[in-house]
Image (cartoon, rainbow, N blue to C red; front, side, top):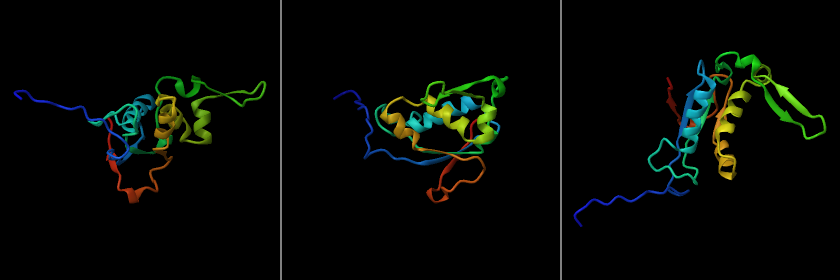
Length: 148
């Protein structure tokens, strides 16, 4: 054969190598940070990315309460949810959500960018968000990733 032949590599559950990654969310813009985290969760930053397989890494996000929103989004953006009962529509701003739980805004932004299927639910379990700078995953020896 006179030419090179390359085969497409499809990952599966047995061949995927998952790693642990720490990301510091302090002074990062929420949307930009979330989209980069989703790429790592899905495994799009790897050479053997396969769309129907969980080939991403486990992501630990620290300092989630220090994330930034641009413009007036902190007070004017509205998150809507429903309790399931008549008249049960509830509204909240990011400031109100962060006052209750500093992780919620980051978790909701990332979950909204994941696929809406069983794979997306599985990928969401690989995300660990913490308010402060400490996390209980030191035994996994995570590597730190810096975003600009």
